[in-house]
Amino acid sequence: MIQSKIVATMFNKIDVTIIDQFYSILGKENVIIKNEEKKEYGHDKTEDYFFMPDVVLKPHKTEEISSVLKICNDNTIPVTVRGAGTGLSGGALPINNGVIISMEYFNKIIDIDELNLQATVEPGVITEVFQNAVKEKGLFYPPDPASSGSCFLGGNVSHNSGGPKAVKYGVTRDYVINLEVVLVTGEIIWTGANVLKNSTGYNLTQLMCGSEGTLGVITKIVFKLRGYVSKNVLMMIPFPSNVDACKAISAIFIDGIQPSGMEFFEKEAALKTIEYCAQVLKSPVSITLTDGIEAYLLCELDGKDEEILMQDAERVNNVVNKFNCGDILIANSEAEKEELWKIRKNISPAVNWLTLTKSEDVVVPRANLPDLILGIKQIGLNYGFNTVCFGHLGDGNLHINILKDNISAEKWKNEIPVGIGEIFKLVVKLNGTLSGEHGIGIAKKPYMNIAMKEVNLSLMRGIKKVFDPKGILNAGKIF
Image (cartoon, rainbow, N blue to C red; front, side, top):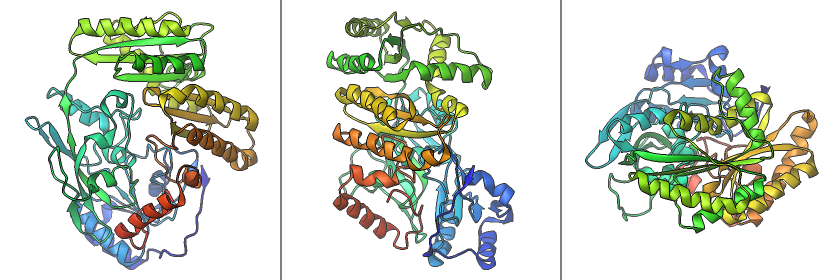
């Protein structure tokens, strides 16, 4: 990893007196100052960025975070809140060193209210653990990021994560109804109420969703839930080109079909993933890819009536046949469904296993996807880089992994970012925006003026100033 350094003279260093205060609040065992123990907290899944924190704190209680923030705010010490470290935009990296608050011990599911279809959780709960816990009670929490087996719910809220089921059920913010938040002053507030309708003043709950830890520290989350959907049909649909696959997506929705998942990946992405599953996971994929095919759609339909699902599957078949699709594979068992999802969910780690990447996630209206993917490939040719594309194209969210391969370090640092800027300009021209779920962090910060007018950015900076006058919370992110 590359040791990175950003100098910020506005912040103060942590001295022995402050460390002693942390000891008194948290106990020595929860204050990490040795470099070999802090190292894990200096990186996430964003390229090879690395920033060493001055100290890592591991609180167990909201009141401990409150006391820590008071000290940091009084002494102008930068604070970065960290979840599981699965981020792809550098949002939880301590670029100004300072304090990392790790939320790993905030891992309790406090309550699942079956009558009101709500759950109260701490932000360090792993997403898949929460999904399984509510499923045992016949309930359903739809947001499902690819890293659901390791990512924390707090990180999902901070980045407004989505996943495959967002196309039908919405993203994380659609399920957050209330948050306990510690402000930079140490004050502890609830942002709303545990109700489904709330027109009482500004919506602070939604403001916190997607704020990337820049406004406060989330310590409890109240989610709304749904009844569990027991049946689904999963199809893998092959196409001779990316454009054919992208055109078919819009046509499916125009026909009135509402998939619960509509995922896209290129053949190259599938090939890399199959290799990764066999060599790294030691879990070979039994799916055989067909010659002459360049793109695939995973189309999932869910519901409670199997007959209606099969009718909808037939309608999908009739639509996609107009776009040169190959033979459609319908998963006939849960094991076959898991095989298909294993390809999709392991694309990102597979690509990053093979080479360093710059990972982007842009969003455009569905009808503009063909122009987007053609434009991305042309920009790659112009700037000399290869891309692997995949993502949640049912809602227009395309993940673009730019591969380093044999690109020189100098070109990777200086020229490739210019090409990324061209991709973002194309996205905005196609009525899209820079991120659907990864957030801005540090990776996309230089490009914010492509998507936002200065007046928009000024309003955001003003909101940040109200919540965090000294700018210590996740400093240097977004703006």
